[in-house]
Image (cartoon, rainbow, N blue to C red; front, side):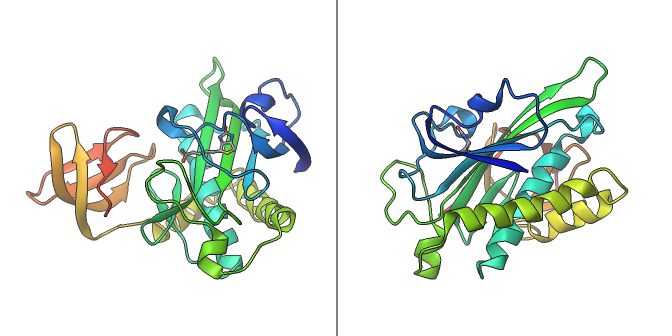
Amino acid sequence: MIIRYIEEVESTNDCLKECREDRVLVCAFRQKKGRGQRGNSWESEDGKNLTFSFVLFPGHLAAEEQFRISKIVSIALVRLLAHYGITAQIKWPNDIYVGDKKIAGILIENTLSSSGMLSRSIVGIGLNVNQEHFVSDAPNPVSMRQLAATEFPREAVLEQFCEIFETLYQDTFGTATPQIDRLYWESLYRKECAALYCDSQGTFTGTIVGIGVCGELIVRKSGGEQCAYLFKEVSFVIG
Ligand code: BTN
């Protein structure tokens, strides 16, 4: 990964849109318009956390396999946090949680080629590192510092992430799919336990019983019906 540090940018995801070089990473001290999922903004105090994006050209993956990028990025973040003694889990599809609090968010923007392959993937990550107070209405943020009661060196954390990610990315070129699926499942938040969810029909009790081939969340409702949800079709009721 080629790492470039920049002072200020609107959004690190956006500033990579013209980049043609594989594995270029941009890390910003300050984002003026950090973007989150579902059109939300991403809160990050200047210089306290890691807000970065990198670009991949994963032409070896078919459109139906695009969730694999999400999986390896999530696994890499869980491994990174484990390296610093923090046990994290993946809240489907790709939020990183410690207990019921969110420590990192991922915004992946994929471009598909006309032949049905993934031509470009811009992966944006916001990892709460040293921020001590959160002021936005983000529901349940937490940082590494809050959990470990110590400051972390941001650049070293980023380099460690890149090292972990590169190994996992190499796995997507080979036959390691079952291994990636297993690692994702092992770290999945709320798997195999009854909890509250909300879908278009309302709030219900369900149990996560699997992940579909394209990344769908498979939930068995308390009445026995099994549903496969795409992103945004179901939300977790937390707290
Ligand atoms: C989420 O809502 O959970 C996703 C948050 C993603 C935030 C990161 S910060 C770096 C990159 N640039 C952005 O504008 N967003 C992502």
